[in-house]
Length: 241
Image 1 (tube, helix red, strand yellow):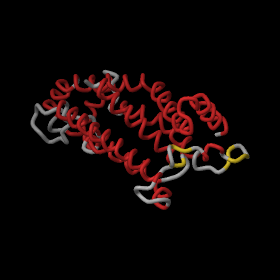
Image 2 (cartoon, one colour; image 1 turned 120 degrees about the horizontal axis):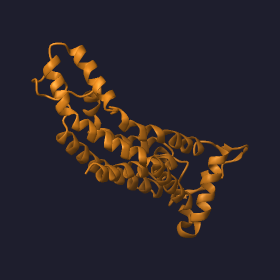
Image 3 (cartoon, one colour; image 1 turned 90 degrees about the horizontal axis):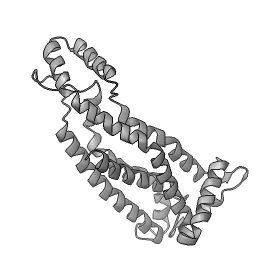
Image 4 (cartoon, helix red, strand yellow; image 1 turned 180 degrees about the vertical axis):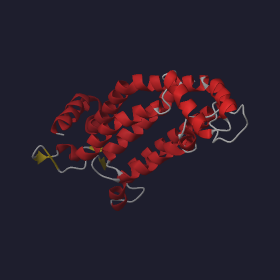
């Protein structure tokens, strides 16, 4: 973790002439953007995968018509079709999963009093009046909701709410264009891959869970989440247009 701490400190030093006391916060935003650039090829592959799954729906409808009396055989046939066309129903999860290590590194870095046997100097950095190692509960106890630190969190919550609302509209639009029925319809009704229908019911609301994350993690990790979520929504708007 000391290597990662050095990376953040070096980025903060580079950005200090531009951002002053908020240079460490700017370094976290820049680090998040670099992580998202690294996983962007996977995001593009996930977008192609979703379009490929949509293109398979007519063939899946034929399988339903052929095997509608045998649900287990239908499930096997759908999985075989996805394997044959090299389309993974869960490929869209990879970009999010590969970002988890970076998030946990930030979380632990800004939750630790010491790094490499010495005091963690990064904990002394702030975003305006809010310490990067602090949490929303700390801000509430030091000035309340409208205190100096509390206003920083209100700003983050506002950004997350706006981004989540935009993400909700994008997801609903995508689901309307490519509906995933739960099964049991007519012979021409498309069949989703097993488990996908249950997941997609909750997809429109996932962006709003970011509000909870921002409220409970250190501010540095919250900045990572807000930046990454904003990137994800903009990326989806471009890739899935």
